[in-house]
Image (cartoon, rainbow, N blue to C red; front, side, top):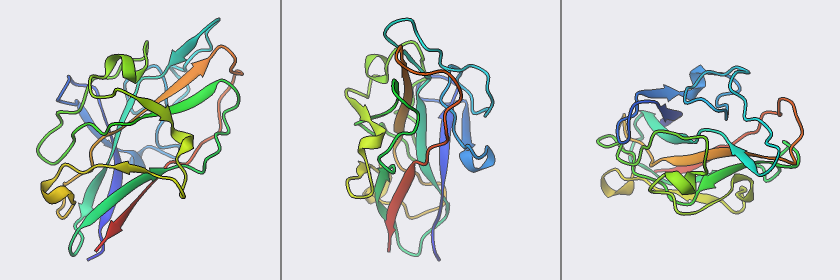
Length: 190
C-alpha cells in the first residue's frame, strides 16, 4: 500500500510531553502561523511586532511527519525544502534548527515548550545552530532524521524527528500580514 503521511505540529504541555499533537491539514490553509502564542489557531491575534531595534521572535514550532497509512515496506530519506524565495520582505525571516530533536512513536523527548522572547538557539537545549529556511531548495535540501527502529517509518503512528522553525522580525521589517509560503517535506518510499 502507498504510504500516507501528514504534517503535525506539537505544542503546549511541558518539556518532553506536548499538550497537543495537531494535524496541520485541519487548520487551513494557511496551515501554520508564526506568532507570539503557543497554539495552533490560525488568526490575526498575537502577531510578532516590529521592534524599535533588534529582533522579535515568534514561538518556535515543532513540526514532523506522522504516518497515517503504512507503506508496503518503508519510508526514509526525508528532506525539507522551500522554493528558495521568501516573499515576506526585508527584515522578516524563517529560521530552521540544524538539529532534529527526537520525536518518534515512543518518545517526545526532543520537545521543549516554545518561547518567543529569544531565538531557539538560546533556549531550546537541542538546537545549537539555525539557518534561514529559504536556503533549502529542491536542489539543496535539509535532511530530516527518523528515530524509529532502523531509522525508517514502516508502521502507522511512526514519525520523523522534529523540525524546529521560528519566525524572526527585525526593526527593518514592514508592517502588515505577510503572504503564505510553502514548506515542503519529501521522502523515499519502497
